[in-house]
Amino acid sequence: MSDPGTIDNAFTGGLKGGAEEPTFSGAQSFMRRRYTKSLEGVDVAILGIPFDGATSNRPGARFGPAAIRRASMIFDGDPQYPSGIDPFADMAVVDYGDCLLPRGLSPLAPAEIERQVTAIVASGVHLISLGGDHFISLPLLRAHAARHGPLAIVQFDAHQDTWDDGADGVTHGSFINLGVESGLIDASRSIQIGVRTIAPRDCGIEVMDAERCAELTGREIAEEIIARVGQGPCYLTFDVDALDPAYAPGTGTPVAGGLTTARALAAIWHARALDWRGMDVVEVSPPFDHADVTAIAAATIVQRYLQILALKRTAA
Image (cartoon, rainbow, N blue to C red; front, side, top):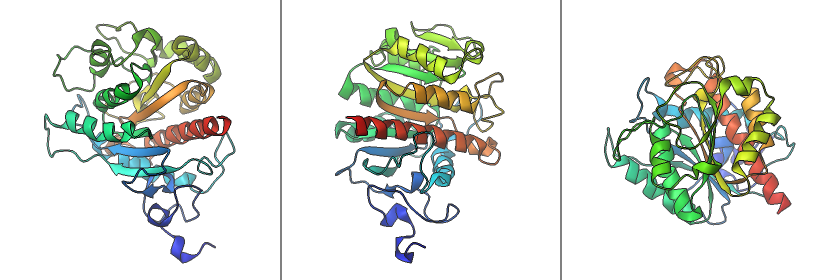
């Protein structure tokens, strides 16, 4: 048994290595990573963005980061599937806590998200963000594009999010439209996976709808993603409503006929060779979840992505 002094790895643990404490107790950082605002010696930071002021249907995604962290505790201390490695053996990952936002529906929120995220990304740390509704991807992309240039976006989603809400529109259904128009997104290399709704425009982004995904394995979906994105820098944004409501009931705008969790995870894993520069998982709404089904799916998506980063680091 571990020394009692090592309990609450979120506060007492090192930047690297796994943790050994009961999954049902202790401070709930993401996968027991140390809570810290220091980025010294850090490779990857996990940031919560508890914002759902742009939601058009069911609210509650502001509680998403806390739910995803809680769900991630089941991975504590185990060799990770499918890589079989401890991603924290040689990669320093911290939980940076949550983005501090103005109270209420404040027009200052987008700029504040961008300001805080820019400071992290500009330091050279790889950022993984936990939402929050899908609007947060716009300030996230602004911060990432400021460092890396225009990015191909790999978007798992039931919706294209290309509605025209104006230059100052703050909704979770317009961030792609604004991202393409402002040059943050390289539409010619971008792809949307799992779409099963109709939007007024596609912004030049390839759409791989849910019916097409159902005909393919996860590996085959990844092959189409790789063919579209190519060699340049890319960003992963995963709206949990890309999954069928049977696998992700806890979300604001569920749409029947979506991906299985297994197929989505396989697609991400087999697209691991891409030049990933950051990612977010959004639209987890715990008030509508059941037995943490949606939160577990979201936590597993991030866990899978962390393994990809760790393998790239080992191969470098």
